[in-house]
Image 1: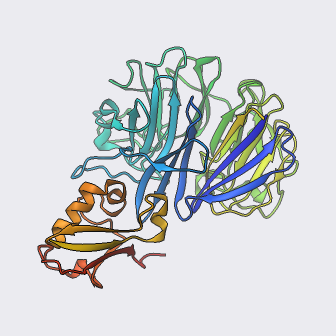
Image 2: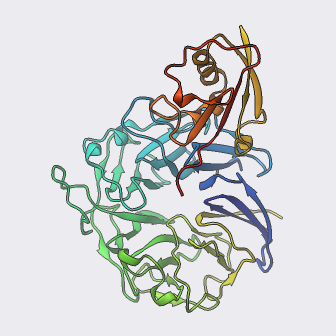
Image 3: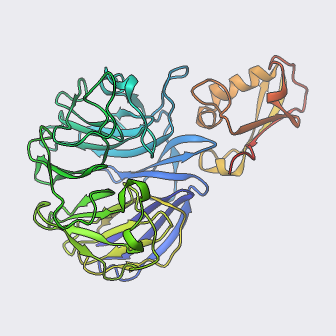
Length: 352
Length: 91
């Protein structure tokens, strides 16, 4: 097997390649030099989709079959001219058997049948509460999309400072799903919004079980979002951004940070936390990570797993370091690079 | 009908192979409309949802910043150029 690790940064994407041992890595890039690379996905046919964003030149989506030849998607996600929403970033691309979805800032969801022509999911984008959606520190972003693999009509979306919505009818209608999670900012008109989800991952075998890294703590639902309970035993802080799950072991990985006021590794000690019991308890993983003078953060999309049997886990920091583990997080190594601010990380497996 | 040369910044090489291209138009407004119509891949990076230039995109017509023009209904000459670049603003 070969592993391809894609690291999207504020100034381009970098490609790291290794064999299954993941002992040594060869770096290529930057792709999209000068552009922020904000989301990466690969569809069932093996085609890569990258989202780019520039403060100057706006947002686009690009496709490639080989990570060498690229073309811009002709009708990517876009808000209508003259409307009250602007497209600032594509936060998430999901390529599912039912099609493609993209979550964007300013918050909205777009869908495509072929990845070429994208249309807005109006049921969400024009939700009755949408005029009251307020941005969080990372902007008004729809950053997480989950689709029930056994029923693709069931879709969850996470929007920072707004909350989680679920659709049971393929995106036509959406209901808020935040019961049990504390609100961060109550809205005057809509008490069902004002929740700040940071990341969500589902159990690989049961879409009703969803783990939620929220602004206000770490939570779990076992009923598809109808109710949540806290799962923070062993965590030094409930605050953090990324949350990933290994499909084989179901191990969860998170990077707690020191509160929303500071948003960096507590005491400068960079530490990943792992749960191997469905979130009931968490243990620190620091071997190989800097345990002092590392006042860095890890953004919500900047962590990934490769789902190989000996679980590869990867993350990039706000100061441009990339760390990799090939043993489920027991030991970490820093990849030989110092990159721009890491915005997203994705890992893909190919036959050797 | 005048032939105008359009020049794009190098960062746009991920968008199009043609960082320099020609178009025919009678006026500056028509030239910009033709970019929208025939170079949509480029246009999304120059214009935003307001219909105008993105805030940090500069457009120079024969070296004149088009933001200083009262209107774009100005006739084009035979060898006019339209150069886009990033504003040195912010940061």
